[in-house]
Image 1: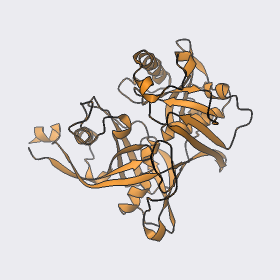
Image 2: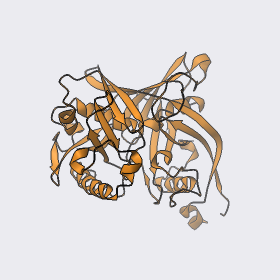
Image 3: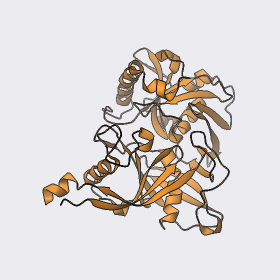
Image 4: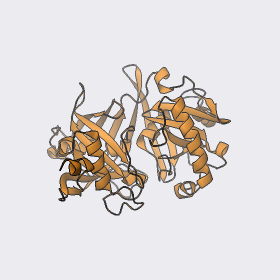
Length: 359
């Protein structure tokens, strides 16, 4: 069993993230074996992921696994995996909205969903969170188009727009706030613990001794800040019913400050031990929703008198807009993203420990 394992793979950029996309049928169904393969493929356990295809950063150490839908009302299943860089850990508890932007194009080109007209609606079931998301993918002449005039901050150039609509992001109030409170205190720090598209802990930047306008690199290098954020995050995870979150990437810490470039709020989003170079799509949905709920840290900071239809969130590389609208009596969130197919072929993994022992 010394031969490497060859696995069909497509490398794609989704939003401001990047990683390999796999068909579920090409990976082991056993989660332990699957995770061993992903760790080998990405090269985890080394800060540069030198022995794999990971990029040495949390936004480039992500994996998407796509297969036929397992629930009514969806076209495909999408399982997201955050593969840790310097540790042998795979976390499938969160969703990733940026990688989500590439799921529709991948599904169409993999033959899981037929192209229909100039734009194809792909209904995606996120297995991690059991939420449904609609992706509208440009398909002129029956083929996915990646070229267009849309642009998103954090990605150079322009590309075809992909509209994402999070149908289940804004849950009922008792589900959105796991503790039942929109605002509470941990270690004398005001926090909002919210589960809306992504479990998050929202804090005012100034309450932790920073402005909230620092670069992502500067915040990631602030050891004292990261240590304090982690203590708060671990406590928040317990309160939110997530258990011991020290080896998990949720809840995500978010630092907020008043907007300075025409948006409604400025955000610094952590993944959770590095500051995101821009902003996670799911994070943007949760932050935007928190802004329109009374008494949250976000709402108090922004001071919005009337909830706008489009929330503008500033981040280290620009801004992102989240459109909130009512559909069938509930609030749904829409975001414009782009994606690109970068490489297709086979990636090679080392034999898993279980395979070696079986041999």
